[in-house]
Image (cartoon, rainbow over all chains, first blue to last red; front, side):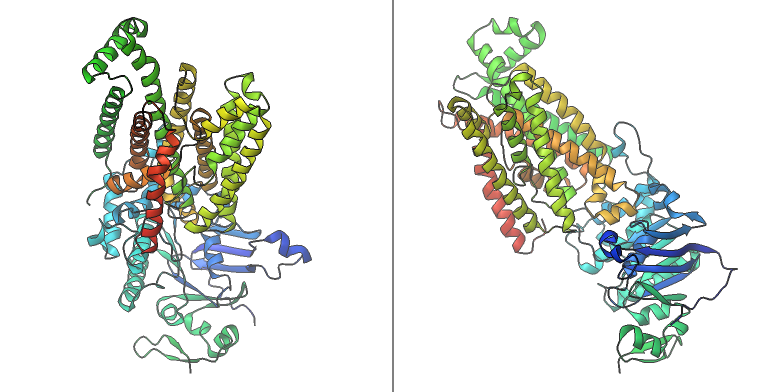
Length: 284
Length: 347
């Protein structure tokens, strides 16, 4: 299979990923010289500004790894990643955190921070630090306002006083997204944000994502296991298999039965969503 | 939005705790083999403050006992307790484990090995700085070991971490036993009783050394309080929020090792303060390390000052090692937490 790239140079680019390879244990695995068996291999793609990109693929195909590379949480051993045409590693951490927010996959929080305190952590990159007690910067009115808005957007403002160690998995997941929103980012990286949520909250998250995308031009990169949700809400999909790019393009181009069947090694039916017309994948 | 930590709330809580700490020390001064009334305590302290220690001590034997024996011991107890609690809070946040404690995890044990080694080799006789320094080396070693184990597992479960602590502790006790068997009997006895935790008879020099280290260490920890908040949620997450995780971790590891080393070199092994105190304080003050850390330092100080007062008066004229006292209170509490956790309650 060949990587499908549509050269649309007019769209502005948030991320430019060029020949990126990453391994969690590079020394052991590259003994043979190549990047065989690496988490990501020779990946080239771009993430367009102001669009929603869905990363899909089977378990262990490198979805989360790619997201962490985009968030500069991991650094690639080969290749370059550029954000707004600047090398990602040239950003200071705190500067990057004002542009890119990352929502990790199903985290637990051991300590009883209140949801309000937790979401306020998202204001850390906007804080002035320094001085002998630099660790003690107090929240400004702007911080509190941004956190309040984020809590409200995720429909958890009424839980602001509850301890994050006590709320349900879905509420915790929404708190994590609220924290990312409080960061006031230009790019939002989400690792399976809907995985713990019931139907209503899945739809809510997707709707909020799309609204922020439409209203503020927020760029969203979203790792998803749910092909249908991804197909319905993403502008483009990126399909990974064994750390390599299989396809990148509009949902209708990527969610082709023969592509999905060969990548997931499982027979599928693909028809159209009755209302939106988006491709819909079902098991036969 | 409700109940956020503000500068006002911080000041109010910390000042209240400071007042409570002074009151605790005053009351503890009053207890002991020789009865000294609270009014007398106040008078003697007042004279010592105004006319100097020597003038105050000329007033009688109770003044000498108060100023030469009880006060230094209580101050040391307060500093050591505060320090252990602050180290406990930091370790819990860094390891994302509410049961972490420098004693349980073998960090204190590492410091004890370092200190014993300094005694056996005669290094400790070469200068006052060598004992705390080699204790620091020992605690740094065991912390590094612990952190390596934690890193190898990614996120370490409570039980795996405790197990690692048990093994590290077993290794270090064996090493200490080995070292004491190399010493002559009088030395060995001194080391063994020190290992049980003792605050007896500190001299002015060791008091000021401890106070200096604690101030520096405390400030270093306090500077990282916000970053530590983010770190409790996870390293990836903290990194994505702009925290220089590696640098913060390094600072915190070295600082906690330093504090543990200094504390162990002056007071031996005192367990469970670093686990029990932060747990109780967290229920009252919340999880924000900006408030939690200073609150724990005060509360830990008060806790150990009281524990030591009980230890030296309960069986008077005999004295219990204070480490025995804290373990008698702390170990059942620890077990309770372990069981309560199994019931699904978040710690």
